[in-house]
Structures are given as structure tokens and as C-alpha cells.
Image (cartoon, rainbow, N blue to C red; front, side, top):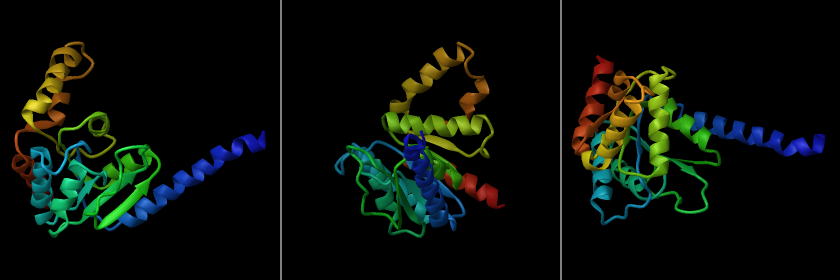
Length: 213
């Protein structure tokens, strides 16, 4: 019986090592903005260019920019942030496809476990920005909203970029989820939807400046 349980015991130690390494590597951060978005957008797409611009705008204000560290939107935001004052951070995850660390990171961490990586996304966050994305983006979005809703973290702005992209989700939340009394009307105020990355950056920057006053 003891031998059968050993793999699980070693897994706990591996989880612990990821937590310790992540905390130590990011301990100097005073507040970061986590940006989510699809790994599938290529350099020639408008979404990628918007990601570069968002990274530039945030990091130019000295705000650390944190992404999942991979290609697509993640690469774009790290790429925009890297030459600026703010730190460009990538939290990479081991996956059988898509994920490979992009080269635009001042700090690059690698994770085996999604839940450890999610903890790091939130630990130093003062804002979340959701760009167009798939299941991973939605997972991270609702994780953040749930933590804010349940007051497990201090409330911070969650901004979604692209009204056309996100309007269907918002409509479903209003017409189905709220209508079924599965959320309160006030829960819809936990996030905002804007059309441009300039608007998203303005929301985040105004919030950070307000905290500093």
C-alpha cells in the first residue's frame, strides 16, 4: 500500500516546489496586470497588434504585464511590454500542443499544474484584461470573476476588449444566467467591456492611480 501511494506523495512535493519557486521569483512585484487571450492569433492579425499596443501602454506606466507566456495574444503583450519600464512576465504551462515560451519575457516561469499557475496570475494582480480567446481564456476569466465575487481577493477591474466578440457572452449572462437567478444583477458589474485596448489601459491605469492617492 505504501508503494502505491508514493507517486501521489511526490506529486505534492512537486506542487510545493512550483509554489515556492513562483513566489520567490515574483516576490518583488508590487502589482501586475494579467492579460488573457488566445494563443492562435498570428503576428499579421489585428488582435495580435492590439495585444502589442496593450503591453506598450501598460508597461510604459511602469506596470508589470503578466501573460501565460505562450504565443498569440500572450506573445503580443509581452512583446509590447518588454522595451518599456514595466516588467514583462510569462507564466508558461506544459501542454501537448500550442504552448511554447515566447522570447519577450524579462521573467519566465514554467508550470506543470494549471491551478498553481492560476494562483500566480492572481497573487499580485491589480487588474485583468481579457482579449479574444477560447476555453483557456474563459477559464481564467471566470476564475477571476469568481474570486472577486466571493471576496476571496480584493476587487480589481476586469476588462474585456472587443464588444463584438464578448457581446454574446454578456447577453447569455443577462438573458439566461441572471434570468435564472444564478447570479445577482450586481455580479454583472464585476467586469466591463470596451472596444479598444486604449480604453482598457485607461480603466486599469485610472484604478492604479486611484489606489496610490
